[in-house]
Image 1 (cartoon, rainbow, N blue to C red):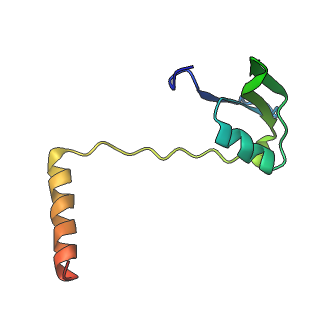
Image 2 (tube, rainbow, N blue to C red):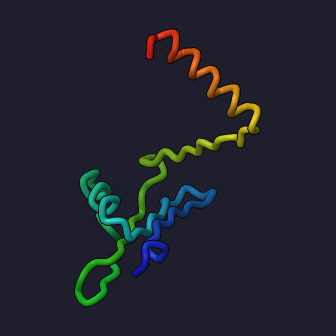
Image 3 (cartoon, rainbow, N blue to C red):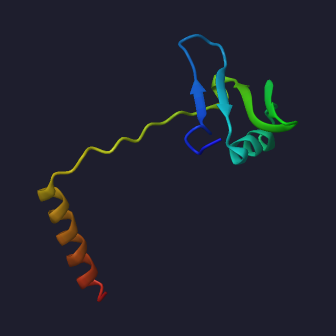
Length: 92
């Protein structure tokens, strides 16, 4: 599979049902297992686990989105000048 095909999908709805996590990411699979969750379904290819699906209680998951507002060129220049002044003040 290509990196683009190896995805992680997190699904939840407005009910009290679980959050579903489908992933090809081995690190995420291992982390969920370390935290005590077991996969509800395993996907095999040639006898090897290539993906797993977990059902997590909503109370166990915190979902947070941190979106950055795009900066204008003027804002970028002002931030750069500010950083330069701070660095100069600290002798860097």
